[in-house]
Length: 322
Image (tube, rainbow, N blue to C red; front, side, top):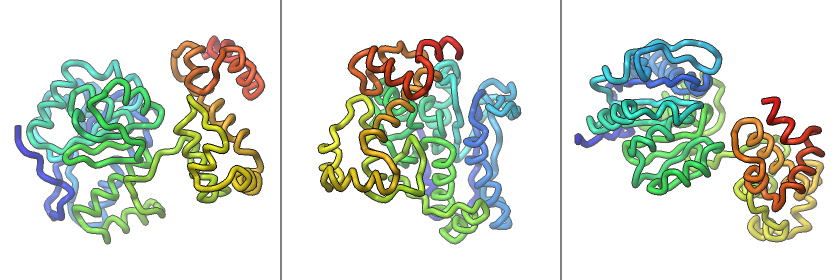
């Protein structure tokens, strides 16, 4: 096995890049990986990234938007400095023995391997993240940690661990690519690329993923409390415990939620739990009792009542329609 070159070291040389695209990859994740490279080439006035599209078998991969992406078969890829693995849905179906073997072969050649969106799952299936720290999309984090105990799973937007880079979705992928451009080709170029996309925050890998996205109404306290709520949907924290973790009192927390979000911490917490319940009902095949437990309800009856009140239909009926 060759030692991987550190592609994050300053180096003016172009990176030979392969972009592996799987069926049902998210279109935005695909663009987030490729377009920063295109912009870097244009703004630098030379080829910093030379990329080739690759698919699992040589058959064009179809993105979630229906756009086909043609590419050579992964088995025909001989060499690259950087392999970007982009996946979205149907991850177990994509993780074939042939794909896993090809990923291991390319990693053994010394390439830096990057998992984007569902890509970290495929790297994990190939054993390429064992002994490493990694992240993936927040929808899969808990199952990811259960399935791959040899990996230290983080909630970061993106994470770099030697020659293994992982990120949680489309916008973190832009952050990660900007970080790569800055490290290798300089902050000035990365800033110009960010400006081309009107991207106005620093790409910080340690930022945690959130389920609900940013809200202009949050302040530091309500944002911190919401992040803790999102991390404890299955075992809801009592509000006094939540306030203590945030370094404040229950009364102050109540006041800030009323002022900033026009609701109580309890109602906000319940909303987060039932939003996640809706996702699990519509996007997974988990038994409804497991959905109830995963969102902090001790009984099926209490879950059913809360779900119906919020979503105007029962979880059972909704699942039959999807």
